[in-house]
Structure formats: structure tokens, C-alpha cells
Amino acid sequence: MTRSELREEIFRLLFRVEFNAPEEMEEQKELFLAQDRERLSESDEAYISQKYDKIAAMLPQIDALLMEKAERWNKERMGKVELAILRQAVYEIREDDTVPAGAAINEAVELAKKYGQESSGSFVNGVLAKFV
Image (cartoon, rainbow, N blue to C red; front, side, top):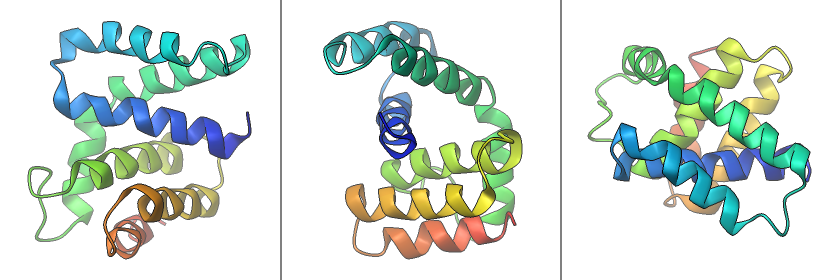
């Protein structure tokens, strides 16, 4: 899979966080990976799992950073799609040295356009621009 495709899979897994209790997410991750096992290589599966785990471990810190930058917004008010995309992008910008900040923002905006509402791309771009 390409990096963009892997990022989309991680986003889809992160999206589940808002609908499941934290203690259920390990099982959710296994179910998610099992349903795509035919099209995921072992290395793709490992990458998705590891990156998800790193992001999930930092969700409280990532959410605090988001609330700092997203003026007049709180995470309960944000759309679930946008929140998952922003969490992933903030992790990539702040913690993942293998992803240039510009690439993280561009990919996040593309995911927002694909999965979000009409204005999601602009919203995601505006919030993430405050991180660079």
C-alpha cells in the first residue's frame, strides 16, 4: 500500500475511538485488521497497528493541543471525521519525524474532503496551519 492508503486505513481505525470504550479498542483494532487481511500485507498490518497504538497512547495530549489551537471549538463540537483526521495529523506533525508537516496537512485535507462535509477540508487546513 502507498503511504496515503496506509494513512487512510489508520484514520478509519481512529474513527472508531469515538464509538467504542477505550478497553474495547484492542478488540476493535483486531477486527478491523482481520476484515482487511486479504488486501493488507504483513508489513502494512504492522505499520497500521503500530502507528495507531502510538496515536492512541497520546490522545489526551493530542486533544489538549487541538483544543489550544482550535479556537472556539471543543472536541465534542467537532465532527467525528474531522476529529479523527486532526488527531492523526497532529501526531504526524508533532511526533513523527518521517512525515513532513506539509505532507501531513495535505493528506489530512484530502481525507477531510473525501470523508467529511463540504467545509471539512478548510476547517482541517485552518486548524493544522496553526501547528506549523
